[in-house]
Length: 82
Image (cartoon, rainbow, N blue to C red; front, side):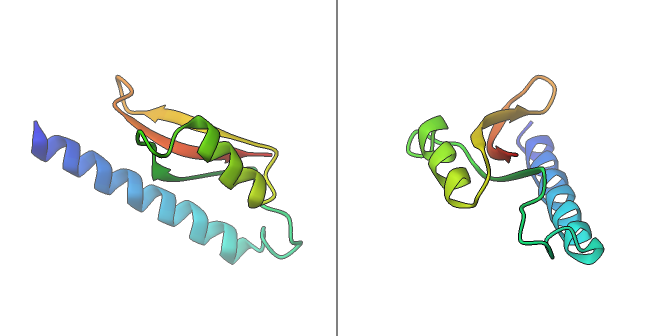
């Protein structure tokens, strides 16, 4: 079970890195506007919805919240949206 969750975390991380790097290559960040969605740090008791929203607003996104990933959603990450 632990190995499967580790693999899922690695796959998720690689997916996020590929998505961010493809935005950089395509020039989506060149206008100074953030991309439509950005997900990063796992949510924890110290990084909850309020802290996530504050980080996102500081990064010039309109909102942010902890979003669950996986089936069933077992990991929550801070995601920012325009």
